[in-house]
Image (cartoon, rainbow, N blue to C red):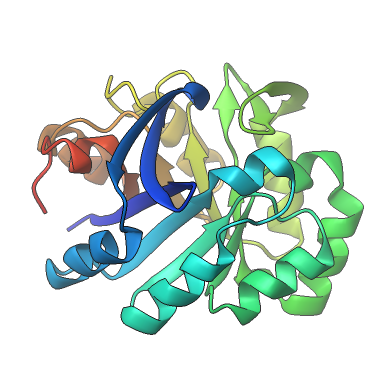
Length: 232
């Protein structure tokens, strides 16, 4: 059975969701992310995808104190991202207890620095976001579109030993239009050795069934969980 990874997006210490990554379209779902995480864990969830949206906007993690609380109060495996653009930020997040750091922009804008981090900390500590608009990688909270095709992006980092990738179709996230099935099929066909986590657009159990049918084993789900479209 496909595994659900709930997304906990943080702004001002609150659990929120954005629509298409736009900060002016914020919905607050809880003032207590730790309580939300514990509810997920009690329902059988094993892993969380935590995004520090304040950190993504400012360029340095802001909510690492909440990461520590999540680690202290749950046994969940946690990947954490948002604003990890320096070695100091990277080590702060790992020392706070993240199992992996999720990286997007750095992999596009400063690949040489990320390569050094991968060599130092090990490729297994990195969860790379191959977020796509059209055919190309988008980054910086989807505010910037690169000229880098997703095939070139994945091939490069797979060559560095990273096998854990997540992919969001930026035009689908937060709208619950359904997942980007053709895109994921092509990614799995091109790179059968990657551990690809689907993200964005999931609105129903039928969407989960469709993802599982094409070989996706894990999916990040946010809005559909918070609004009761999918019951764990």
